Image (cartoon, rainbow, N blue to C red):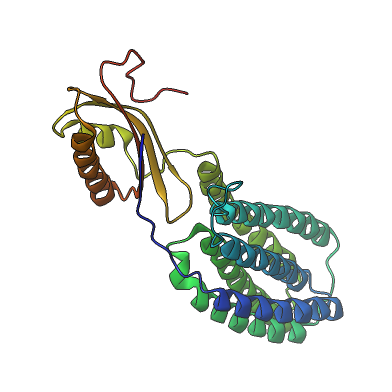
Length: 301
């Protein structure tokens, strides 16, 4: 059995995560105080969402640090899957927070209250600026890392929520439409469920070692089968260990009883093909010749 490694490492910008954590602690504290003083449920719901941001950012920061720890005898993969687990936790908290907000919004619809709109307006502006800055800090890394993406989505949705709260504050101030506060809370919650669902689905697929959606296993097998000396690639498994590592494990049925030197040359061809065509950077191949075992592409071991 042969293994090849070709790892790329992405700097997760821990400093940017720390800055975002500090900003959100300040925003959350201010919004809780302001929500209690003004009586605004939408402001308190935004504060609750911000608090979930703080937790998600802390989880993301810890996970990014853990993922860089070296492998050991007891942890042969190290903590590389910590970031996927962090994304799963963050997605789950988004949905839980949303359900709490929906419950509170329905209760407030039944019992509307007068709200101090000036406090709502000023605190929502502060939240927009703080979250907007945090979004800019994490935007680049969010494109390549599911953990940072989960934190980024938390911050981006909270920035949108704060914009909605600002609009609500202006409507309450100038038109006395206090029911808007509950409506905005409900809309924020529904949006949280929507974005949380997709993030939860993606992280669950990675935790379950599902084949990435952009990988067609039949195409992988077909291209490898075109190489000289290859009879059939089978028993194929392809999964993400982390955002940076895409693994392939398979059996390779050969059409000749070749030497180890010949197999090494063939393996190099396969590694190059998989890396260039499918971005697979960790390959494990078990060579076989005239072995009596199932030759299906997918076999549950």
